[in-house]
Each structure stands twice: as structure tokens, then as C-alpha cells.
Length: 304
Image (cartoon, rainbow, N blue to C red; front, side, top):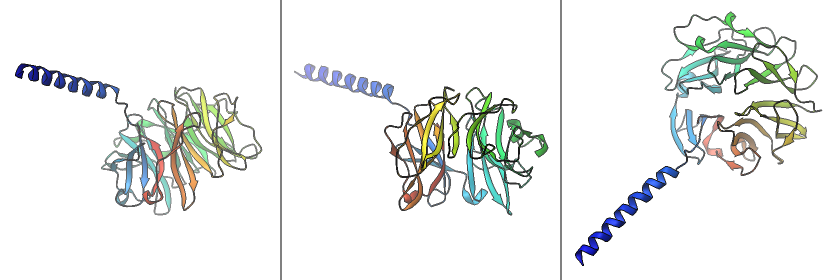
């Protein structure tokens, strides 16, 4: 009888270990999102998983002032952000712990909207240094502390008297999609990395804004006012097959594809708050709210 109990206990132990191993194998990594937080206890840059658990917080707001336009380098070691200091607006870079802060632009002429190329070689941004918002690129090597790059080393990609803004990269780092009002109202355009072959992708009677290129290079998500209020749309990379993803009385904006292209992060106006952050599947289904009014989290960006 004792022998039987010993054998049973052994089989239970083996079964328990087996279940644990299988469970570990089936665990799917939870995606994480970074936010700019202006309320305690997470002041600065906070990281949250999409189950709404605050993972950790980095870069304290007291170190770099009021941060906006957060962009992560592809290797997740560098953060570029816009900050207002002494009434000037410039871009700064820091490591993930905020221990090495470097100013990237020195014009003070409203430099903002940084975006790293997926291959990590370039940083695109918007600057008004030449009188109106235009898109520039600079080599990512200029972000290093030992770099001797100057503002004049940045390459201007657009050149007109209107507003070109909100650059987003194709996954192969060879093209940029952006918004411009050069034809009367804001529409979505694309161009090569050297600024050549600029072409219009949308043509609606209302503004089309804030494009983002999917990781597979096939689609572009953007915001459109063609249906009275801001809604999210998606189209093929050549501008065809434009269709609506959201249908709400609220305003949606700032869409971003997840790294695997399966989800879209975005913000939406909410009663009792200016806006909150949501995530949904790429086809517009399974909308999930990530933030609450009490969190004071803004400027969301995918972290993993």
C-alpha cells in the first residue's frame, strides 16, 4: 500500500512539472506601451503593459521638464523628446534612465515630432527654422554625446511655403509618409528618403492627418475628418482602398501600429477627460481602453 502511494505521489509530481512547463511554453509576451506621465506616483516616462499594469517608470519629469513627442530608438536604448526650455522648443536625447541628456537641435525654432527610421540610421523631425514647418532628417549618429554634428548638418526634405509635418517611416527605411496642406487642406503624402518623388495619397474635402506605416509595409493608418469628426482610416501604401476603422461620436487621433502589425494604439476624447489611450485590433475590432482619467498619461508609444 505504501508503495502504491509513493508511485501516485511521483506521478502527480511529474504531471505538475509537465503542466508548468507547458504553461510556460504557451505564455505570450504582453506588449508594453510608454507614456508621458504628469501625475504622481509615475512622474516622467512610465511603461505599462496592455493589461493596464504599470511596469516601471524612467526619466523623471523634474530632470527634463515638460516632455512631448516621445520617440524610442529601434534598439530601445535612446529616447528623443521635445522640451520647452527658456521659451525655446528643441529636441533632446537621453538614455533610458535619463542620466545623459543631450540637446540635438539648437535653433529654438519649434523642433518637434521626432521619428527614428526602423534601421536606426536616421532621425526625421519637423522644424520651423526656415520660417515654416518642414521635414528634416539627421543621422542617428548625431545623437551620441561625442558627436560634433551641427544643426546645419540636418537635411531638409520638403521645401514650400506650407506645412509639412508628422513624418513616419516605411519599414524598409526608404520612404517617409507625412501630412501637408500644400494643396489647400491637409492630406497624406509620401516621399523617398532623399525627398524625391513626393506624391499625394489622399484627396478628401476634409483634413487627413497623422499617418503611420504598418510593419509589413502594405498599409497606412491615418486620421480623417471626412466624416465630420476625427475617425481612424486605413489604406494601402499606394493610397488605394481607403476605409474607415472607427465609428464613434468621439474624436480619435495619433494611431500607431504595434510592432507585429496586429494592433493599433490610438487616443480618443472621453467625457470628463481631454483624451485617453486605447488599443484595438488592426481591423478596428476589440477596442480596449488602457488609461483612466486619474492616470494623467499622455503621448503613448509602443515599447515592445
